[in-house]
Image (cartoon, rainbow, N blue to C red; front, side):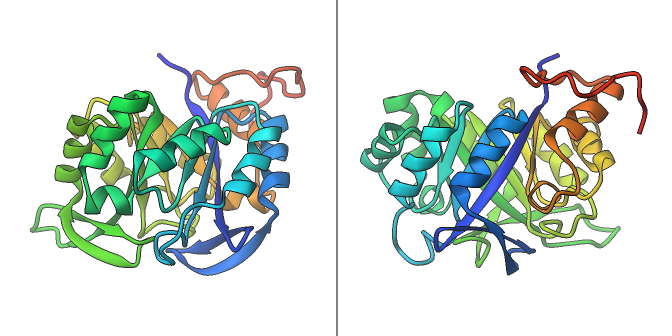
Length: 270
C-alpha cells in the first residue's frame, strides 16, 4: 500500500492565508510563506497553495508569493488560482510549483486539462472539484453538483460525471472538496469520497471537514482517499503533522516518516 499523504492547504486571499466555513466567514491564518516554511519543516508531504479569489476577480495567482514560497519549500507544491492557459502553467512551474490545480478554467474549457497534460505530463495536472450535495432524501440516489468560482457558482454538472471526464482528459489527481463539510470540523464527506474514488482510477485528495484525527483515518479508509488535505486543525494548532502521522501509523496506515525527527513513540496510544 502506498504511503498516505498529509497535505496542509494554504487558502490565500490578498496575500494572507485564510480559512472559513463552507467557503465564507474567512479568518486570517498567517503569512503564506511563513506557513509553508513551517509545514515543510514539520514533516508535511506536500503543500497546496490556492489563490481562492483569483478566478472571481479575473486575475492570476500571485507569482511573487509563489516564488517566495517555493524558495523555502522542498516538498511538492501544488498551486491553483486563475490558471487559464498552458503558458501560465509554465510560469508557475518556472516559479517553483510542481503541480497546477485547475478548477473554474477547466470547467469553462475542459480541453485545458488535456493541453496541460500533453505539455507537462499528467502528473502535473490536479483537477480541483468543489462539490455540493443536491439531495439528502433517503428515497433518492445521492447526487452532488460541481461549483465554480471558489464555490460561488453552481455549474449544473454532476460530480461523478465530471471526475470521470477529467480523468479521461488527462488529470493525474483529483482534489475533492466537500462544500457542505468545509471548515465545519465535523468530518469529511465520506459518502462523497467513496463515490468518487470508486468512479475513477487516479488518486483522490480528500478536502473539507477535518476536526479530529479519526476524521482523517475515516477519509483514508471509509472514503478511500489517497491523501488528506487539512487546514483549520493545522493552522490553529489543534494537531501537528507529527500528531497526525503518529495516529495513522498506530492505526496501521503507512505514512512517510518525518525525516530527522524521532519525537514520537509508536507504542504510545492516543
